[in-house]
Amino acid sequence: MGMLGLARIMSMKRRRRRRRRIQADGSSALDMGRKDSRSRSGSAKRRGPHLTLDRLPQIIALLPMQDAARAACASRELLQSCRHYPELKFSAKTLAMDGQHNCIQGQMDSYIKRIDIALQNCTGGWVKRFRFELQFFHELSAHHINHWLDAAIPGIEELTLELPRDDKMKYKFPCKLLFEKGCSIQSLCLYSCAFHPDQGACSFRNLKRVYFSLVHITTEELWIFLYNSLSLEHLELGFCHEIACLKIPCTLQLLNFLRVRQCNVLQIIVSDAPNLSTFHYEGPLIQLSLGDSLQLKHVNISIYPWFNLFEYAHKQLPTVARTLKLCS
Image (cartoon, rainbow, N blue to C red; front, side):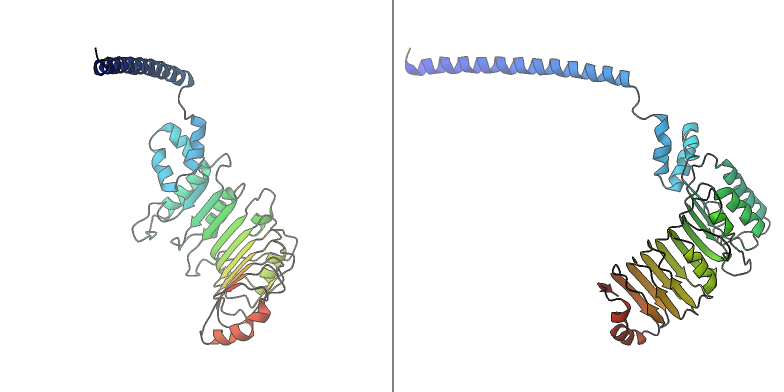
């Protein structure tokens, strides 16, 4: 047998050994896979379901309100979880009004009853955000609004109240609810109502964000409100036509954002807030004094008529905001 034959025999032996190794590795891998699958199935049986019922309220709370309502129709467990949803909103859509969002004659009592029932079911302090978007209720009485606020305010953190803009209701928001014991509201948005804080002892200590639009409040009342809102961080005023002078006291150490829009009789804005960083103004040319805040970096001013803006920006802005970085 020559060298060529010996080489062939050695090559065949190497192939046989390689096939044996491959077969051995494959069978062992298969056995290991079977054992692993059996162990996984066994451990899965021991562990049970991954999602427990006590997690459902946390998941439901992350859903948009409409999706949470759909989920409530699927099972009793989901319905119970939806009762822990952190936001409750009353609007033309959630009250299933007609397509034009009109409160049809004779249906007012039905809508009022729906709101009453929903508030009665909100037990346990789960709801943190209430939105009353009632701009379609033109004949709504102050009695019903006060009743709903009394039921809603304890324990909540955010409140929005929007009423009809035709000024027929002339609803006065009960300021005392904001400084009574148990009130924890941090964000307050009011539309189309009156806000008249008393000159006596009052404290809006929890308020951090305030937005007033079409709110009847005088210069003196606004000063009382701000002076007693020491935690305020964000303030927006729009279309408040009874404010002639807006003065921000130096006691508002946390205020960093101020926006004022189209308050027609406003003549001057004076801010002594030391940490104001962002200021937005839209309206006619007025006198501005933003103090010596070293934090003021962003100013957005929209003045009409617009041709007054260039002269104002050239002559007044350098003295109004010395630390300004961005102006538009």
